[in-house]
Image (cartoon, rainbow, N blue to C red; front, top):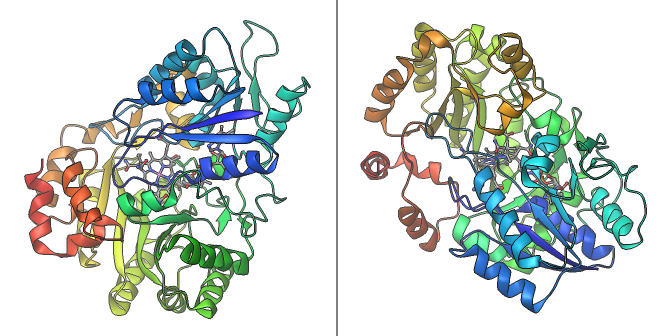
Length: 477
Ligand code: B12
């Protein structure tokens, strides 16, 4: 079949990020024998014209959308991407008329609330969760007019006008995912080289799933609640292939958490060290179970900075958020990063259940003591359906109807609402290495573009260690 796959993400903050999920499903459709064409809307100033041209020249039998973000999860400077997806679908329907090829939706944004989004977008089918196996199954069912009802993760309407049915996803260890090192994602179709030029880094995964139980988090829902590990050698082979084929040397490891399970992280590092690829990379990490030997090994394998899912510097708040570590752990990680010369970015969430003015102050103090390279601090927690936080918010009457989740909704401890913004701004502004995505507009896209065009290939927060840059963050406001 002629498949048109559209990557709909146009967000460029904190960087344009390679659409790895779309690249995986594009590859799986290509391997299943379909003729795959891709449109990436990032950087397109007139998406409708691009679609029109493509569809005129290459009429598709089926159209699929990859939706990465639903909103920017930042409060109060919230960006909601849903209206732009609705416009996209309306444009597509108009351009594709009178033929009506089936419209399929997938991606992390879709998987967060597939029932709601299928209706909201008026799509025909969706795949919730991983697409590598289910997507080709759906294409096959459409081509040969078979039933879709048994496809893992399928979202469909059993008959016209009925509510969507969501078949639970079945996260898989089978090929093609487990063979991803040998059958890598379609880097070519999604323009990996362009993303490295404009966004600095390529993306790679060493595992899927998350076994942690943070109360607000969607990762176990999106990827499954246990870790599924790629063979370390396969990860190193994929990196080697990306170095030799695309000339890429900078990576972001997009695992929900890189350093857990620690043995696997250690083995991935060993495999990279053996290859001696001269690459550098960053990742998300947790203080839980982090050790100095592992951090040393990570550095030896090319890691030059970590984004630590710290959330808070106060033990009561950490416990309330369901975190699996205490303040002493995160202090140790700060010390180790400093002793090894690894860049460290704390990601914090202020205003969760039980947060008080005192705990905010305590967090600021603890974080400063760890001398971070940068801090990304969010105010309020985005409430996602089916998380423990959602159950709490529903119990409190904050959410009375599931459709409320379509618009970004946040939990912010009521007593803090009038003072939190002021507290954080006055703490952050003189320091300059604090990024407040919900409170201060970050770097102007032009500044960002210049830095990337100049060849800078690390996450931009690394630069916050340089004083002149610190001022700019606030001047650009
Ligand atoms: C790593 C990561 C980052 C890194 C990315 C680094 C990089 N170089 O890629 C950084 C830190 C930069 C980042 C930034 C942001 N992120 Co982020 N990020 C992630 C994370 C942990 C992994 C993303 C990933 O690459 N996964 C691996 C790929 C393979 O999985 P996938 O994309 O889901 O694709 C699979 C399926 O979805 C499906 N699929 C995908 N497309 C399609 C299409 C079809 C047709 C089908 C059938 C299936 C399908 O199949 C794929 C393969 O199995 C996710 C959470 C998570 N665990 O998923 C959040 C996540 C995607 N991020 C999120 C957000 C909000 C953001 C930011 C907006 C935050 C901010 N305010 O800055 C920015 C936006 C950046 C941008 N320019 O778009 C949200 C999006 C949800 C929402 N609220 O909208 C997520 C889901 C986390 C969350 N809060 O739940 N992020």
